[in-house]
Image (cartoon, rainbow, N blue to C red; front, side, top):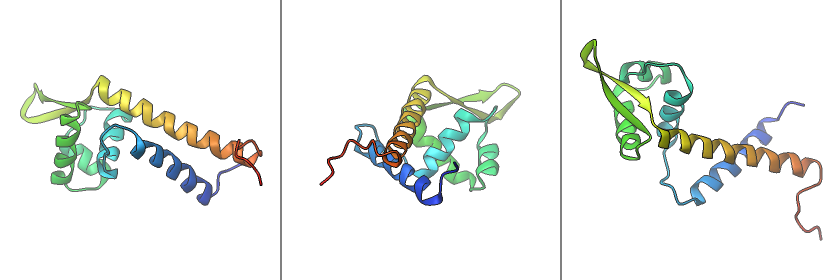
Amino acid sequence: MAMTQRQALEMWRRALTAYVRGEESDMTARQQAVMMTVALTPGPHTVRGLAASLNIAKPAVTRALDVLEKLNYIKRTPDQNDLRSVHIERTVDGMNWLRGFGALIVSAERDETDEKSGKSGRAVA
């Protein structure tokens, strides 16, 4: 059965709440979108390509990449064919963050499923 909009938002809220309670640095939605695009879509990735894919300005992509690079989630490498261009690549740390965030979403979905089936584990008064 398809998830309702309300259920999807509740699942996202649970995952996001678990994320912000963690000890890792919070990323903005834009930074997460850039990270996920780099990690989950075929490359090579450039600032121009990411800006076009996400439909946001190149300076916004650059600012997001600056943060992601400081977190060691992405790395920038010069394009050997065009030294004016830089390729954006995911790192092991970036993929570990993404796997962890994915696990939070799966856990939130599991909680939603348990509640539907009455297995919430919460005390009922």
